[in-house]
Length: 175
Picture 1 (cartoon, rainbow, N blue to C red):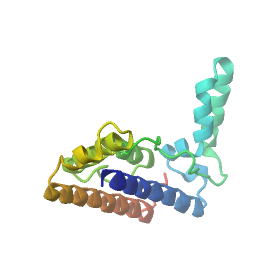
Picture 2: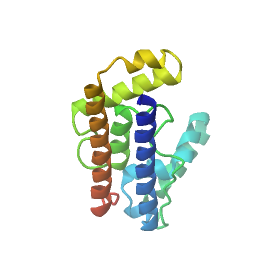
Picture 3: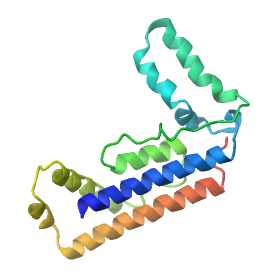
């Protein structure tokens, strides 16, 4: 269950993040109208490349990365440079997504949801990396506790969806 629920919430979050990016791209927003925080996605490849550049070239690349801020060209956000790192999704991922996009409200609906997500992630990794056998993980929680955990993750999915819809409806991706 942990592996499946972990995969489901991760796939859902990736779909929502990519959907937000695709919708912003469809609106053909100029860089000069785009919220500053989203430049991190538009310039993701260039910003990543700064890790390998030193000296005066570094300054040229920094200016290049930031020069789009006032451009009248249409912004192009990349789904290759989303605020996820490929690791098992945890509460910190939601905080980062909220920060990068500027989504409304708190990144998690309540602290219990964060604990549920952490439990899913921890137990998913224990099973997936064969740190513990499935039988011992399965016996850690009563059925009622597992159902409550599923409800928490379901509530998280609804929270993410609602925040994304609010963000797009209110055009919060604009300056």
